[in-house]
Length: 623
Image (cartoon, rainbow, N blue to C red; front, top):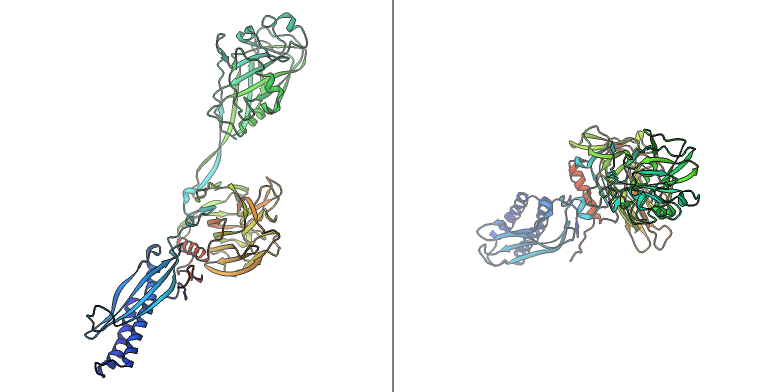
């Protein structure tokens, strides 16, 4: 036997009153008879025990519902009637509790003691296997392991995102001539060697070598005279993936001015290894310290900077734009600003001239803007909504107009107001091979400004062009076409056969709890459920997209809209309104768990002043 939450038992005073009235009737019968109990008397006492045991079940239901977090452990034996002839009692024992704590198997016992001070009951009746359900409103979303949990009432999770521009001036030490490592280098382009004189010199030859540092025979022979120039900068504390707004390398022209004629140089960034973008300082005895990186594709940047010059008189500077080079290095997946070394290599391209430039006076200047995250206050744009699930699946503003924080909007709590914008959770762990999903949204919809089929919660893969690609998408909650109401889509297009819809005439511009649940029916089929404000409003069974069985895989969850086109794509299908709380699970909650979360949301956001009716079947069997 299954008992619903709204099947309220009698309050204890009412129970006592009814028992007393029954007892008066029975006592009248007893008073008119002798002390020898007849069958009629025995039936009267048995009926009293039966009603007392039933009252025990009803009373247990009330106590279960009123106990904090559903922590009801039973009702001790309690007198209902006690007079000079007999005593009538009831008690309730908890036989078993479901794993989620929402369902209890109760044994109700009614007892009649003759005479009243007897140590054992003469008549006993047990209701041995009554199932009672409770919402146990202490259940919160994290009890059931959500993938994403966005809660506007926890206002510290609402962040505004900006940027700050900083200019960094990395250092070069030039070094002493006796040092075994330095941050500058001149190296022959043909064979990657250097000399002690070139190591100890205080200038660069760009790019025809100085005979005093190498030899006349080398520096007058076309095949061997050209040099590669290297610089390693330290303390490059630029954050990974920062936006480089400007980066320039400045070299001071030295005396002598060098040979005349136009010369063209090309700059690259170079790496230590293919997995380490921060090179070591140059060594005095090393070779191919620049030749090998420049000849190996994954040891230098794709980005480069080419500059042609006609002269470089002493006292002047030569400036190179290296913005794209620095950006590529900073974007490297292994860039570590705590190491902060950045290498630049300059090679000869063409021309007959050469330039003398000071090693010690070179300077790299980097201006960058980095993302700043701070608390979003009332009226601020919400650029980041922090995920409370513990999975790190934060939702970032992605398309359209950034939503805003609005305070005291729902039950004196803040909400996030969406107006043609969408947030994106790029899942830290992609979902693969999934068949089920459960999603909840507390939202006050603005249907008049929302798109047809506007998305509330939509999952897709970054590798496909839209969220209607079978196997790579699942739309947990979306607008019911162009009308008021809510839908869900298990697989396929928005007009597909796996769409479940509910038209709601009272949902516009009022706060609602929308929920959807996809639950495995058997090895091939899935059932779809839609809920509105605690009630199951529609159900579709036997969904069976092609597959053995059909599964979906996603790595993105969109809120308030979705993406169309290949990444990065553009925003579409906006669902506007006030969003209070969004919860997504990668599995089907049980019916009772689904109801408990809806009751949690109802109470928290004051969607209704009355507890929702639990219509779920018992989760534990009747004994």
